[in-house]
Image (tube, rainbow over all chains, first blue to last red; front, side):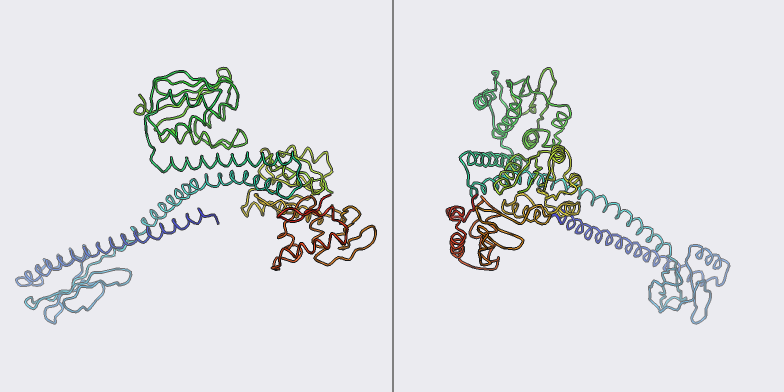
Length: 372
Length: 215
């Protein structure tokens, strides 16, 4: 299994375990609190009932008022059993229970759940057993559990998919680049071995060494870009004032095809990165031949090449910073991607325009705060 | 001597394989894309195809089916197991992963050619003939008795003709991987081989490396 898949499975299962434990802990805490509250309510109800009945019983035993109260309480799913000494006065309990004094208990009887309280004092002549149906609570808890499960499932699914996509994306450039490094490496290894083992003529020696050199340079280029890419993705960029005139002159010296127009403008940016960016753009443009004109506008550096024409599909990919398949272009397709990354770090952008008539124009647009 | 088609879009690797195969006495044809390969297939009598899977136009996997009766060895940078399985179950005889060793490539080519009987089991060096199937060496129609190690050395050098083999490699070939011998053992046996077959001019010492049989 690939490493990133392992990482994904590990991270995701950790997430599932922690998330589920947390969620069910909260749910069960919630239910327990609810029950606690219900018990407290029941105790206060018991107390008020006990008080009421003691008073009524004292002055008016067996009256209609009592019957009315019984039926009223039963409607609220509160059931009572009242003794006077050893004599049973009235019982509305659905199922008879015998409970010790000073007890609060939760009884499960035939699919229903009850809170049972027996708590009479010696001062009171009545012994009251109180029973309250709380089955609705169980039902509510079950409903809550079900909805928690649904939410849990959906959320886990969502997080899983997001995590998978993110991890895959992180892995993708690595696998691309390892493939890109492998080709020059095969060449170098092969040609070095060829030189070592085959009886070579002068021509063959030159041919093989040339290949080794070329491929080594290729690798150098790829590695440089990788390093820069790593730096600009992670590290802070180091902004200094760059004189465009000076930058242009340096580039014109390095690339004989470049003609520059004088400018007095400055920009703020990482000099090394801006140089890399310009070198990339120029060497891409150079491949088509033709003269490259380099000048500064109000907000950007502009690179024009009348002889360069970029196909519509590739142009779109370049502007959107999509990967261009290496077969369709020269090089390894990392250059422009790197330029976009550099401009992103400078909060600017890179725009390609190309028509058959006018050739190609690349505009490197800088953020207003980074120019003067 | 076999006709081998190399289908590989990377020019450097294609050229390298082609040159190496020519050194070892094979005929090679070079194609840089799938359609080009099919073109060669129609016009030439091929014995073996070395096929890269990542081609600019057609997938190498779909090409394998087109080379019906010709053995195919996949040469590719794809090292995922599912690709290997796909290549081998699709009809490829062998699978080599980049970056690879040239000796490995030559050996595998030889094995596949022998297996498909495209390569006759006879190799001629000057007036010496090696019969690989029977493991018999003759010089001017007279059989020469060789020890098992001497024979293994000769066969390896003959298959990799014009390419130097290191002493280490030769030791592995003739005495097996487990043998912890001195490299001088190889020198002694090579000296005897030269003498017995009078190949002093053909078996050359390569400085600091090993031996090469030149033709």
